[in-house]
View 1 (spheres, rainbow, N blue to C red):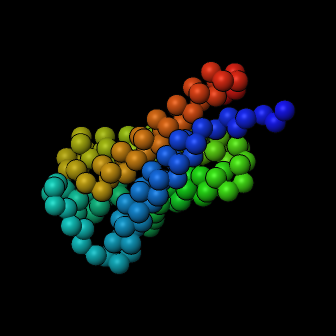
View 2 (cartoon, rainbow, N blue to C red):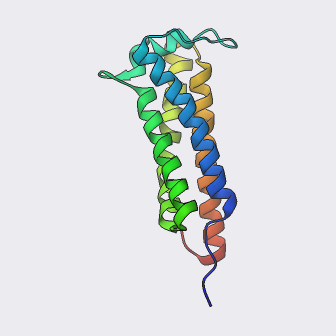
Length: 150
């Protein structure tokens, strides 16, 4: 009898949707960085302060570009899993999510306690990173409960 897939559909679709939102957000900030466009910040007034701070880049590379690559990687892994059913793609995505969660946590800390300004787009990115991390935690819990796999 064929073994049922260990990856719930809600995980792969959640990963796909949330990583796409994160990619749009980080991609927007990346494009604004390279085109030197102003960043409208309607709810919070700190977007320009945050994205122009010394913490917004690593050398010449904007942090937003690293975020866009992170989200794009997760999106591609979700598509790969949905297309091929390769569980390793979904599990790899789940193992990558702590990187985004930790990076977002550090960046939010810097905004609040060091820069003393908040960027709405950065908060959206932190929210998507957190959701992706929570999805991964639920996946690991579900897999452990069903098969003893981690």
